[in-house]
Image (cartoon, rainbow, N blue to C red; front, side, top):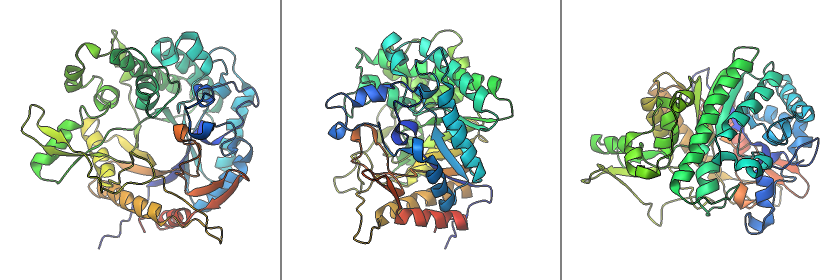
Length: 455
């Protein structure tokens, strides 16, 4: 029976995002993000809930860092809110906003926790949406790079692990191309070409951001991108079905137009053939800017899509889940642990074979309830996490360059269009009192960390 032991160098961490936990949206010079504006509109977020208070992490970060220390993590991934640093999106820098992150990072370091900072996790300044349509304009890429320079030049003496942008498909293709689920800024454009143009501009921002980090950092640092690939999983591991899953990865979701340019310097030819005249306009030099050298790639993976070989022009078929297939407390959250293994494998096959891979998000929403004793016995979350971590271990045992795992999330939080109706945390938040209650999964994960293996 395997021990599921990880290498001594394996990184154990947890992850959060600024708008989902910080609150304090009007304090110390911060101005609105697109999510402040979006969530204030009727019908956009469940129960008209907003991130105005969220987990009040802005005021409670010392006790939250103590919670991380109790968990035993040595790595914490968080995001920095652009509207705190440059409230108008461009121009004057708000030093009070910088000071908050300086205090947070110092607190983390005092507890022996390495900060991993994501420079953009969806909360772009509302001012830029009003000024030029934010991601609809190429101007956004340069404004983002200027923001990155401001942050890294001020915090680069404390932070040496940087991640440029989190999940480009969500704030571009969902933010401009779909209405369900609703996603900020919620501006529906006229064509899919315009949608793909927004993600192309985000890729440019990533590339310019990589350059800005390396130019501004006062010390050697690690630069990564975070993507949420649509993972194709063979229905079984026969050679034909494995080949089918590998082919399907090129065009499933937005893979061919986001992770492909970032890692290979080109859009997937199969995707471009599919898009035809709806493909984005690419100017000379864009792909070289986008294809920056990376020290790591972060993958956010929760589920996947089963694939089998087929006698059709594509050579594969994407399979629907049966009605009885297990899923957790999100409509899309089908339980598919092998997605972690295949996500790592597909990415390693696509880019440099030695490019370090981090699972920067993995977790699940379940219907957590407090018992009479004030506990949360989330055995379903433990079951989910255990099986997914076994898939990570398989990748490590086959010598794929998987270097670490960040559970999503440290605590329950504002789950975007779902508001506070979905709980992804391993810590329960009583939003009325802001009490933190570690769940059973918290204690289980702490034991995994202590033993450096899946327990």
